[in-house]
Image 1 (cartoon, rainbow, N blue to C red):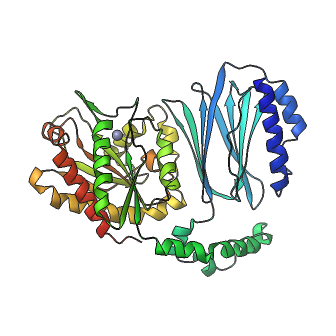
Image 2: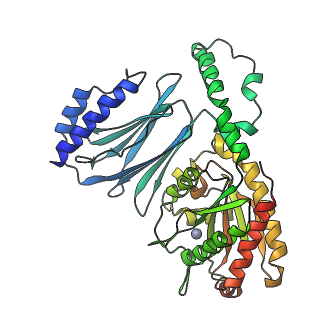
Image 3: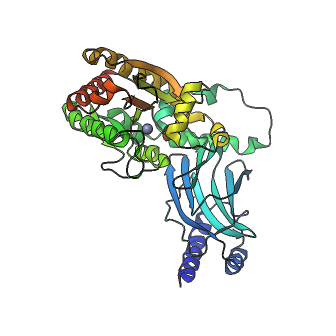
Length: 420
Ligand SMILES: [Zn+2]
């Protein structure tokens, strides 16, 4: 019965979207797909879930197989306006699986699932792609694909100089025929006066605070003190205290002790239309003398310490090579300057405000490849609030007064900064 429901939904899916799609030349024939599905043999590994977060000319897709699988992927250039990426999961059975209900738009055009000889193929069809990342993560086992379009999000486009119009027209290329049309169309859409007015008159700065870890993932542990609890307490204090600031609205990625996969956090911040994203963490180290605060922004720096820390927070132990392939895509690099400005403002503020506690600020201008920040369409920071293994900091981090002092200093700095 389950299979029949799947079939019906799939049929519905195809009838609806075949009509709205402009070019269907590369669509697998429906009949072929059906016979593929009918012939589907049971594999041992299952497809548990697919989650999709569409963004403004970007999309994040997380694929959850029941256990670690071998997979391969490839990006196909279909036309000047369309790209497809396919991901083959080897030895995975998806019979009975129903694709999630996704809102398709001009960028995310279609997601398909089909049977292959030795597993399944997931195809994501979008508009033209600038860059993409594919990362494998554990606990739970999943593959996360980030897919970034050529179009710059409106917020960034407002700030960025109009490079495209200054560039001399490229010499005749195969692209040329569609290029001017597309540029014109993009220009039109980016001239939406309503959208611009909205961003300019927006009164409050939306700060999305992400208390790291949670639920089954405690983060760093020192005795009975868990990182997930310390950062959650701080997040609640920031939220509460923010009511005293007219220009700031704080939203939390999690409001209780639940597990939230890394890739959902930036996606949540994007959905909340945040202006700043801060992921809160606490550090741990075997040498109990080591302590201090650190504020990071996203970068694929090769700094040894920073990348080691990133590996801990990312929880990507075996797949360092995959992690290394994460590209600093267009939007990531757009936000680096603003992220650094926030980091410096907050760092300097903490240095001054926490003097009486003898708190050490180890640094605030370092970049590292923290996956939690990847894909955030806003300035983003990872804030290590101290070492729960350090004797004095361990004590301080359990005091309300100290957490409130951090919260106040942070909010003061953010409200003063005129980034954007
Ligand atoms: Zn952490």
